Image (cartoon, rainbow, N blue to C red):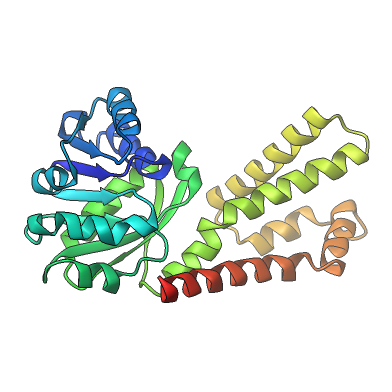
Length: 268
């Protein structure tokens, strides 16, 4: 199958590069087009893909088309390529806030569309993505989408309404983790560590703890209990976190981001 990319921003480019690098698709079977000729040409040269003449060329030649453009461009691009739809083309959109219903209303009846919400760690192959299929998309379409997006991380199939929670958790979550790492290292500097050592130790601590959760059959609660001794340093630290609202702050952050995603979708 030929795969096309319309809009060669960071996320779309990462997904295409991941698919090529993992052998999901051959570079010669990838067509690119972007409003920025420079970005399309640079990506094509980097991964061995071909720059298409225009967006319609991509839709006409590719069985799967990834919309890697800005959200405000999605409906205009779908209108532009509508003459090539429906048919065998599957559309995958990674744009936040543009619902399946809005995209389907813009396209000819029967157009097969899937929404995906990847996050920025996809840029290094460690993404977390939620996907939801439109009313015309098939199980095979979903499988092909999962294969493509799995090339840059893990994929979970959800309902469209659940994509807002994916956005609040995985989409915005990296920023929460960066904040946590930053604050860990800042306080460690105040406690006497060098800035370089503090940041490296904070980063490795978060990475190691995350891998423990991923590789262990134990729950986070069990792992917390394993590292917490009565009267020990970890218990003192956890108590201070609870007293200052650490857990409630995390919950509030996920909820606020999820609600904002819902508001954007409702107003888009």
